[in-house]
Length: 241
Image (tube, rainbow, N blue to C red; front, side):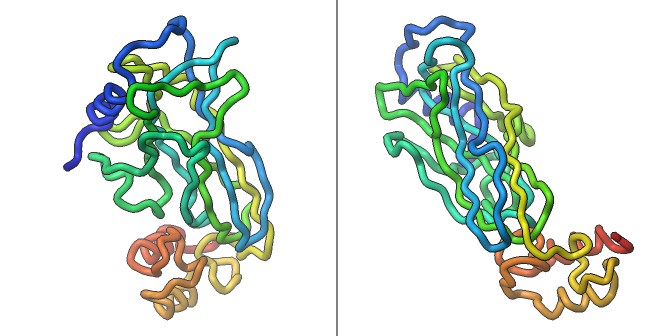
């Protein structure tokens, strides 16, 4: 069953926190990434942590959060995640009415974490890592960013909740920049390095149809060369030097 992000998450927050905390209103929880920048080589692991930080001078108690994240799946292939600390009542990718979690490899998803029943957790002023996402670098690029989206589709929002309908979501502008070293082609889709995307590249893609090359021409990083990759190549057709 699919329900809206606000409806689903409010219900979860109610189960986690039946009373409001003794914190001053006006305090918020900022979401960001750690590290903010890193450099790896093609094929190496990339670790990006989601961090919750109190916006003021004191810690902020909250019942849970739902965070929408977006990245370039042609650069980073999502491999999994590790929750830190592992004390959440629920921490996972839940069904989403806007389809965000239908495919976790397509470059966006929403991650939900809820405190144990009857308790809350605290975002300290120096930050707390909620979860670490694990990726593999697919291709060389000077910089590729993972970002937090405030909303997606019709019903889905990034939100940090104290209790029922008490939203303490703060700043979401933090990004994680990844530089991937290694030999790069002239541009995405230029599989033979000729400086343009043409029939030669199309034939190369078709020759790998249905396979997992662990990189281009699996441009969306879903582990299978298919129609989405074909359309991405057509969309970038022409010279690219």
